[in-house]
Structure formats: C-alpha cells, structure tokens
Figure 1 (cartoon, protein in one colour):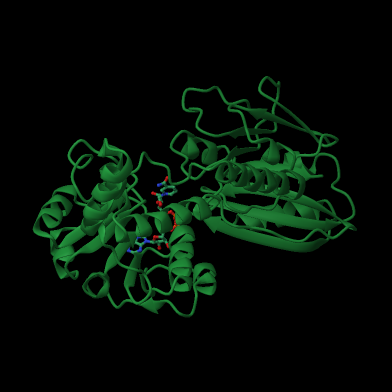
Figure 2: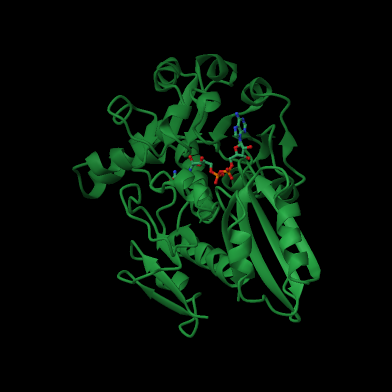
Length: 390
Ligand SMILES: NC(=O)c1ccc[n+]([C@@H]2O[C@H](COP(=O)([O-])OP(=O)(O)OC[C@H]3O[C@@H](n4cnc5c(N)ncnc54)[C@H](O)[C@@H]3O)[C@@H](O)[C@H]2O)c1
C-alpha cells in the first residue's frame, strides 16, 4: 500500500527523507490524504478529509490542531516532544555564562567606546573592572522541572563542575534513568531556591507554575544570584525580578522573553525567543514526527501522541494486524473478540491501552484479515476507527 501525506507547511527535507518514495506520496495538494503533516498551520477552520488516519506536528505545541475533534474521530495527533531539547539546553548554558561573566553589559560597554589606539586600550583597561565575573564550578544550579530539557541542562551543568539540585515531583521513569547520578534531589522548591546561586525553570506554563519564581522564593537565594527563564514568560513574576535586581539580590535575569518592562533594565539579558531556533531542532522535530507517523501508518504503533496512549507491538511476519480506536467504555474488547471468533480467527497477540476517553487496541491474527471483518468491527457502537494495517 502507498500512503498519501498532505503537508500544510514546508517540512524539513531530512524529515521528508524518512518517508520513502516507493511507499509515500507527499505533497501540499493531495486528494484523500492518509495523514497530515504540519508545523504551525492552523487546522481549526479546516475541513479535515474523512480519509485522514493521523496528524503529525513537527514541534511540541498542538494549539493549532483540533485535538478533541480528532480524538472523537479516532485520529491520533503526534508531536515531537524533546526534539528541541538540545537546542534549548545550549542556550541555557550560554545564559549561565552570560550571567556569570556580565557579557551583555560588557559588550554594550565596548560598543559605546568611540575611541581608538592608546585611548581605546586605556578605556578598556579602566572599564573592565566593572565586569569581574565568577566561574561556574563550585556554584550551585537549581533546575526546576526535569523533563526533556531540564534533564539535559542538569546533566550538562554537572559536567561543567557545578553542583546541581533538581526538583520535579512528577519526574518520569524515563527521565529519571537519563538524569546523572550526580544531580541531587531538592526536597522542595524552597530548599532549591535557598541553596542555588542560579535557578533555571523548565516546566510547562499551567496554573500551578504561573509565577513559580516569585518574591518569596527569590528572597531565599544568596545575594547576586541569577534566574534563567527559557520556559515561558509568566512562570517568572517579572515585578519581583525587577525589585530583586534593584536590591542586588539578583545579579542577572536571563530569559527568552523580552518585555517592555525588562528589556533595557541593567542585569536583564533578554533574548528574542531563540530557545528552539536552530536548524538542527527543526530537523529533529521533522525526523521524529515522520518516524512516528510512519510507524503508525505501517504498523499501527503509537508513540508520542498527545491524545492516544503509547501502544506498540513488534510485527510477526506470519500474522496480520487490525488497529482499532474506540471510546474508553466497558465491553469493547469483548465485542471485538466476538467478531473475530465469529470469523473463526485465532488471536496471536493483543494489546489494549487507554488514555482519557480514548482506548486503542492492536490485534495480531494468524493468517490474513478476511474481507468484511474490519467493517463489522467498525460498526460496533463506540468504535471510532478500525483498519487492517498493511
Ligand atoms: N524557549 C523556547 O524556545 C522553548 C522551547 C521548547 C520548550 N520551551 C518550554 O520549556 C518547557 C519545558 O519543555 P520540556 O520539553 O522539557 O517539557 P517536558 O514536558 O519534557 O518537561 C516538563 C517537566 O516539568 C515537570 N513539572 C511540571 N510541573 C512542575 C512543577 N510544578 N514543579 C516541578 N516540575 C514540574 C514535569 O513533571 C515534567 O517533567 C515547555 O513547557 C515549554 O514551555 C521553551
């Protein structure tokens, strides 16, 4: 079978190369697409063809995609979480150095020196005293949020010789495996702030994290500390940061979110949301989502979906596979198994997983999928989508 993919944005060539031409037809204008591949195009007003089995977003956020509508149709939406983690990590490390060595103000100072020759040299030697910095080894970095980015930042800072404290009450097993054993677990956010010369946040913006870096917590930090924010602007209380900079409690605030209030304040280094802006990050996102889309279309396996559970079974050549998305209600697997028994089929393997209101079942049967079986399963009340995976 040949799959048809409609792209709504230009997708990195490296990603498209993961979809071999003998099995995939990829174009921005394509009738009856099996899947849609996009970056930031808005799908909310789009009339999504009934043929669409999956949507792949090369990037993390899915606000531009009608996820609940697609869930109701049994269509998984894939994204590429963590594909930009290295890009963000590198900028956070740059931020640590920017703060520690006063690089921003030092560059401003040099640019403003309208001198030459001996005069320039003398002004440089005279002025550099204002920019004496500190080195990182021996200092403590507090990392709030140990997900894809936080773990990379924590491990890299540890390798730079920093003492690293981490805080994430919901850390996943996968991330815990990736975290360096040299990273110490903070007992609470207060414990982390009180012991860190620099704090960096890598949590999503939700009600619980809005204003997480606030006046009370900054007050716990040693004098002349640094706050780094490469997550989302509202995670840091900007007014509290400005007051702490003025009082000398903070020496630097390094962030990816310039605002009118902070942009020109001494001690603030504000970058224009550059965290994920590398060509590699864009490629990584496209490669990751093309791979997951391909595994879903060709094998029915689900990884990195925002609305479907993780579900993957290895393929066994002598079996055929049926993939079923259904509402997460009782007796669905029972009804599906009955249809298979009525067709005289033996189940070689079965996987059933659920996430919220959606359940997903992979069934491997000995032999081939007989004609009409998929339609019979599809007619069961509560089945959202059923297909033979070829
Ligand atoms: N600057 C940029 O360009 C840029 C790029 C990518 C991501 N981001 C931001 O970085 C954030 C982190 O990205 P990620 O890929 O590491 O996400 P992730 O989902 O892999 O990790 C987030 C982690 O935060 C933890 N967490 C949630 N609430 C917490 C709390 N109250 N206290 C402590 N930990 C908490 C979660 O358990 C999870 O482990 C994103 O939400 C996004 O806003 C920014």
